[in-house]
Amino acid sequence: MDNRPIGVFDSGIGGLTVVDALAKSLPNESILYVGDTARVPYGNKSKARIQEYSDEIVQWLVNENCKMIVVACNTASSLALTHLNSKFDLPIIGVINPGVYAAIQATKTLSIGVLGTRGTINSAAYGKKIKLENSRISVISQACPLFVPLAEEGWISGDVPKAVAENYLAIFKESNVDTVILGCTHYPLLKTVINEVIGGDVSLVDSSEATASIVQSVLKQKELSAEGSVGEVHCFVTDSPDSFSSLADRFVTIKIQSISHVDIS
Image (cartoon, rainbow, N blue to C red; front, top):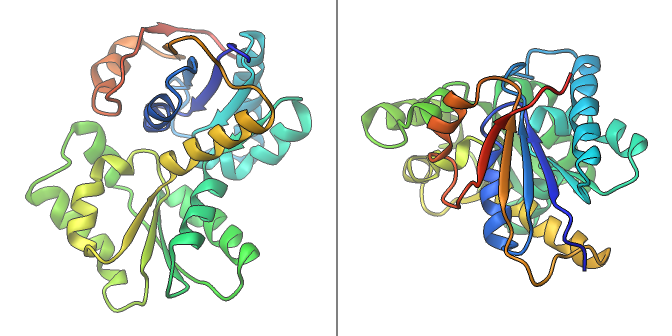
C-alpha cells in the first residue's frame, strides 16, 4: 500500500483528460497535476528546452513526494521521456506508448491512423513506435491543429467542428485504416464528431484511457497502489489559475479539489 500521490504534467490544460481517465480508473489514487501554462505550447520549442522544462516539473513533483509520474504531454513524451527515465529513480510513463499498444491490439487490417498536433505529427513519434513494434503495419498521420482551439472554446459539436473534421479526416476515406489514435490530449473532447465523420467501423484509441490502464498495471506490479483512501485531485499552474479554472470543467467530469499557482522554473 502506498498512498503517496501520482504526479501528472502537461504543457497546458489538455492533460486533464489523462487526469480524468486516471481518477475514474483509480479512485483511491490522489493526483497532483502541473499545467505549464506560462510556457505553453511545447510544440514549437527545441528538444533541449522541452527536456529542461520537463526536468524542472518532475523535480517539483518528486519534491512533493509523488510515487510515479505520468507525462501527459505528447511532445514531452516524444522528446523528454527517455531523458527523464535516465535521470529520476521512479516510474515515469508517457502517453505515446500506451496509445500505440492499444492501437496495435485493435487493428485487424494492419493499418493505423494517427491524429495529432503539427509538432507530434512532425516528430513521427507514433509512427516510429508502431513500426518498431510491428513493421507490417502501415501508418497514415494527419495533423489537426484546429482541434485544440475548438476543444478549448467548447466547440465540440455542430457544423463548424464537423466541417473541420471532414477536411482533416478526408485522408482516411480511401484508406484501409480501421484504427485511429487520438494523439493529443485535447482530442477526446471531439471524439463524437470524429467518430461521426470517420465512420463507426473505425476504432478510436483514446491515449488517455490507454495510459490509465498502463498506470494501473505498473502500480500493481510495483506494489504502489493506494488503498483505503479516496483520491483527491490538486492542480498547479505556472500562470494565472483563473483561465485554467474556467476551462477545466470541459476536460474533466471528476472533482478537482484545488487549482493553485506555482513557480517551477
